[in-house]
Length: 223
Image (cartoon, rainbow, N blue to C red; front, side, top):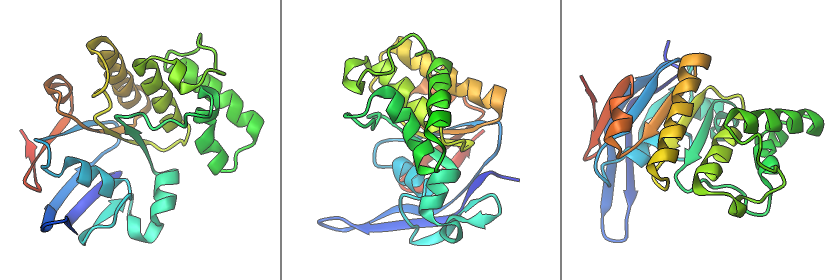
């Protein structure tokens, strides 16, 4: 059974000048233990689809299904808290929280005890290769590659087994990009995560188990 799926998803919105039909009957499935890449030109609908999968918007028509329930029935906030974690190109770390507090943040939302959250956050920072970095540092004191690793550690803190990543290497150099993608692949192969990456990078798509291509709001699977 698919962990996450889109079924005939449509999405329209009104821009300043016209109505935009961003998604046109998109259907796709995402399974446990697989790495997916969604590729396509800017404006093709990739990020819009990722937003629908994350519950960051509601489809105009169709539905997003997680497990055997619709996201609408589950509730978008609960879906984002329990089912999916989102990694952004711009990291989206809290600038006034140190890196340990950033990773602890999702666990606080889930009501986990502070001591337990702190220990798990330290373990996660070590798991993403930041065990030797002072956890009291603010995000601005880290390199771009290190900040993206903190963002991944924070995504893992929620226990959600579906990771949605929007151009996660877009702001990184080639060495750090490679390390981030290796880390995401290891989550798939070693822990059974479902990782869905929106990307322009051909090498990331080449390493994916499944590649979906977006064009003008339509989705096709590349064979």
